[in-house]
Image (cartoon, rainbow, N blue to C red; front, top):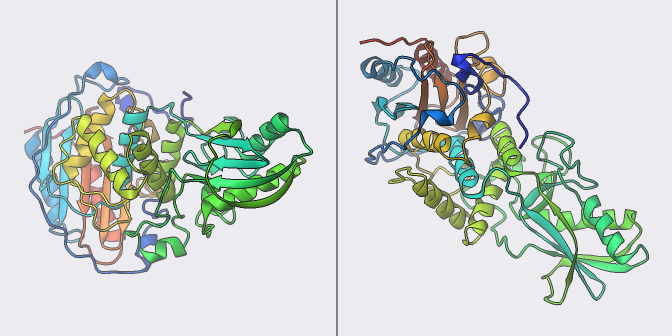
Length: 466
């Protein structure tokens, strides 16, 4: 698989190459507070007991991380975490976990087992589960069959197809890897260019619902998310904007794009409609999506809600569950269980983090980070998390501070919810995983984020002897 180009900070604190960053779009928080434009009161989340269980991580599975670097004193780190909760910019529902990556020692536990609304840190669980279960090289297939003048376009899970020819890896991005032009070219090669055909779109293996009932109405209205199916061009965007309006029926719209590509290739398309693939049909074209590693990188960097939900449903389908929100939740939790994460109390209603009924604890997140590092398929997650002071929403939050370049993390933002989870290096080169979740916050993100940032700055500067 290819290596991500970008910031590479190499020293033993060469952990610096692995630490840092924020997805620049959280649950669409690429501009701080974008999700807080429509305030809505969130009920306080119940705090459920949860005992952390450490995943086994061996030191030879990492890039150099300074395995002999001193472990900060738990008492000192605990004091920093308690100060964060006591900070007037946060509140009593601010829960914190800090865990040593190599040993699993818990260095801070401020209700770290209490589950609460996680916002977009949910995507971390989705990504790790998919990578672990499917592997970084996994791809989905979009196929076309032919029978009696009918071309059936069969959804395989790719919502990032191109309307024309795909770039096929010429660009280091998942979107547009393969396209309708590629399929059309294969069809013409198989059938000739003078054929009259109708196009039938079959996405029956992705039964929906297109719009997760857990999502707020503004999410779709503002283009923060599209209806989720197993087939779409450019994540169902109507125009080339990050938060563009989306096609109401992504699969059927993709069928229209396929018809246009066929027409351009010389075929006469008489109709585009929904249907199912006839058993007698012959496969005449197929394309594969970008590898999962690139899909996850896109998902985390863009905090793409649609692709997160889509990936959860692909995971469900590939693990013999229905490709629905419920199937996705079951598949994610089951995979985390297999990785050794203690999932007691973990509740998921979507894969993106829009649902205010999701319940995740700081320890769920720190355990997932450690489990990812220990798993051959999921380990690349740490390359996909953005780097503080260089990428995403943390680019400016941490610019010019000691956190820049030594943290990788995923943000979470909803009305009344601020969260952050990732991996950070201390000044002495010790690698720590952390999660901070705050729900029941007043309107606005700036104050709790500033408090989080001060805590992380103190943590990375921490020699923290007894």
